[in-house]
Length: 355
Image 1: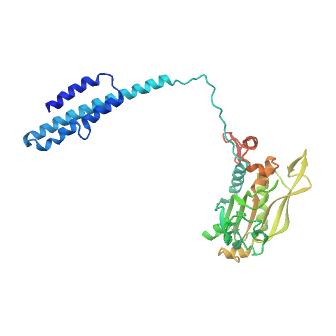
Image 2: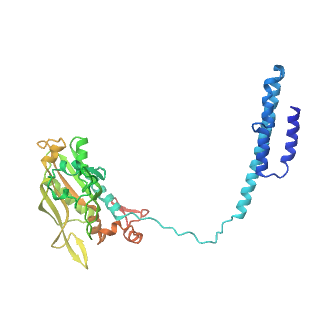
Image 3: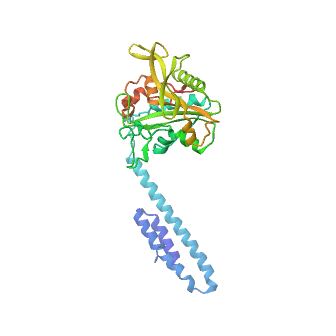
């Protein structure tokens, strides 16, 4: 023990001198390593007489703690000194110009989805979602689409396997099937999301966005459908009144079916919604076909309802004056900077942010 105390005194003197971090670590290893001086002393405890063992162990622990504290203190001192020197050498030149800061914009499609969801939520619709990759059953069969329907052809639909059992959904209508299969009526939902079809030109894209609407309950009729869509169109385009007409059409999943046209006129090369004697088709709708209700185990003698499908991208183009659908997917920041919405602007109303 006397030898250890002598080593401690020598170490105290040595630690007062200027040492490097590697030299300190070497001292630490010499003392506390596997065969270090302190470690060797602990190995002697077993051979010391029992009457002296307790005192020896106590003094040894005191010396060990003192040495560890001294070494750790010296290591901290050296590290802090190195940090101070590094800071002195790496001063920031505050005269440099700041880096350019670019604030992101909300995409018109995202903005339009938020506006649509907000409007329909005011009249009791909830929002449902489904996967982009769907089964053939949910996308076609359950929706009363016959096997020979053109929409099933390879040139219209992106199939993901040779058996044509998995595909990229061609509309968000499969969400209504999923919703009705997992729950019981009444249903009052909208389903916005991405859809896919093999088509590409100025007004069509292989990927686009659609919102599906569904309302199933007792005693629902075409009057409810017309009132719902009339309210939505006026709120979305922020008009007090709108010219709207139902034009007979055909969809496998609705009967009767209709296309919805709204009145417009051209002023200075721009479409003005709500005025004029020209008509513009904006969506398809109809009463849910009884076969669709049977496919989801809903009794068509007790429940009926309506469904509609709206192209979100097309609504955004009409409202915000965008004339080429392909620009939505070009990832051109200049375009987004012009047509996008600032997320930090103060909201002007419940439907979204000001431009």
